[in-house]
Length: 541
Image 1 (tube, rainbow, N blue to C red):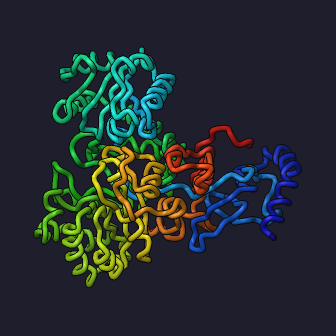
Image 2 (cartoon, rainbow, N blue to C red):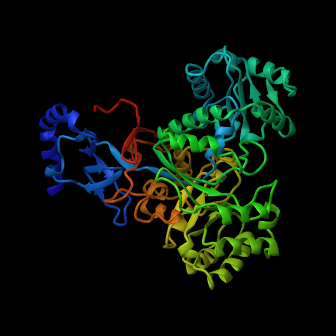
Image 3 (tube, rainbow, N blue to C red):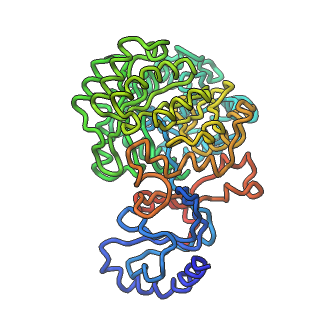
């Protein structure tokens, strides 16, 4: 009752405070921000709800604040009963490598479910891309996502993009499809393309990527990443735990100079997605020598709040070594080096056999090093078993559960229900986008809720979870465990980062948002570090 009364009094005071704000605006060096008259899901330890929140200096300073907490430097936004959630956090994603896509990336295509929606998305992209410039979607899409179970035809692409070449590619490795201008461009570069604009899976699509990406500059990368940042912020995704890009092919990142463009964006405060970087222990061109270099020369937990180096991921050794059972000497040495240097570690694991092989090593290391304190995390975990979950729990580990199966269509997990019911120290969800999977968190939340993949096939029956639980996995206070930011990252609470999203619809209401509409949820107002970084204009300010 007190909270409702406070909200009512705050609303009554808006007019007076607005006049004060206008009169004294020139005296305010910085403004506090208040969201009022809302349904705020805090995703905190008590799973509490709130009606208002006060933000100052990038942090939440009060939940359901008293009227006297506001002053002439407070910007007050009346949300008129809209839904607010903590900013969504992708626990495992290859985000920065998207900047190495050629042309102008149209990531929005991954959210379309009919050919007409896809064509509308491409046509909308042509309105902001200079004439003659290439529009691409490489990875994160599949023909089967569209009800028609096919690519748009060359002529359909010509109709919506008459002045821009278009190149679409499934999974990054093909098959692919172009419009006429895209076909002609690729043929000039030596890539085999059929008359209907088709590019075969495998070597032909690899060649297509290589020739298109050969002349990308750091200015291109900056433009691309800022565009992708706008896309994820428009969905309410505010933090990414980035696992680099060392696998050759689409988005490969040179670990010597490959982050230079990103550092420029951070220094100039141009990148508005909170980023946590896990450097790779493995690079296909360098190997174990690179891991030693990172451990000896990189500064862990270093950087500003918006971009920080936090650990090693996603492999400590070459892929053909991490799946051996038992792990060989090189793999064991790599993981001992990580523990000895006190680094966090996030490891790509799927099958029970490879999870068990790693746990054999981790349990030995845990007797000497506190892996829970180091925040070691097994990730993906499509086929993790109850017995393996208990072994992780005994070591005090958190689990990163990621929904690649949504895109691949392969049956199996992760077993969301089983993991959630296991009372682990921390659990977080992610996508493994945007080459292997869709980047959109709402596609992943749809998968958790329905058990259905990108094609609408039921592949994870019995492991469905509620909408609230799915959003919780993507946004709760537990996400901070993975980056040693327990009291800062995830959830909405006093002293925590002020990252949150105002949703376009009430995703928790199955009447207002049927299951198929979950994928279309977006943010109408996104706040990161206390700053409004995305605003559709639908809310009066």
